[in-house]
Image 1 (cartoon, helix red, strand yellow):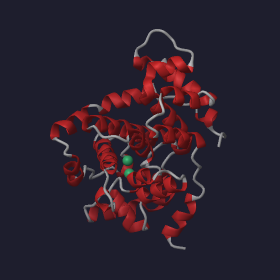
Image 2 (tube, protein in one colour):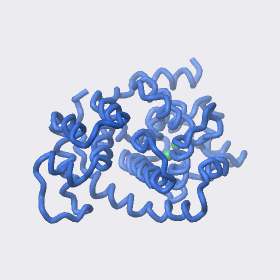
Image 3 (cartoon, protein in one colour):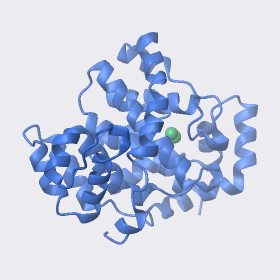
Image 4 (tube, helix red, strand yellow):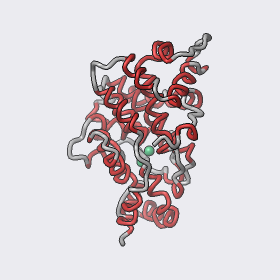
Length: 291
Ligand SMILES: [Fe+2]
Ligand SMILES: [Fe+2]
């Protein structure tokens, strides 16, 4: 069995996606569904309700009065925050895991994924790009292939690093050369197994190499740039975080000016802060076992 085949055989052991996550994504795709419909779906899930209420009362948002019902929380947070909290809380149990060989703890990987998602969202706002929900979801999941590939990397890390240094290429390219598959392709395959829309699958699959996509969408470029900015800011770069920069082609395609890029970078610390506050302590144990 080749290493590629061995890696592929591990994908089937990856947790399945919670049904609620796909339901939420569908709701978000539907232009007509409003905050009340989203709140309606969430309120039947006790763990999710707890997380949304906690977030609505977090000090980050700065409200003094406590809310105790889903309806109040929905009004206070609005569709966008409710979605972000719900989707990250749902996905959390599947992807909050360490990526061994990359030297990334579960916390590091989670933070990197969340900051990438929030940075992607900020870019969407500045560039007035739609599909924010899908882009946010793809960005949270973009590195989940590292969880699968981590154990293979652990044994070969030095060899991969040597290729990366000798050939002056990013770690991901060296990873592909050595193991015949990279974490981006694996992540795309997992997303496919989860029956995610092709747009999300492609964002994950091409997050390190947007030009390789047959049909390069703004979503693919956004996730790629957001990831590169976070790696450059040393958020979740782990041992492999060398030689990262956003693709010139992506920047051109999206017509991103240097001031937009600078603004996106300057918003990264606030994104980190919101993760420590709003998204912290999402109770994994409480959610585990529900799928
Ligand atoms: Fe990656
Ligand atoms: Fe990443």
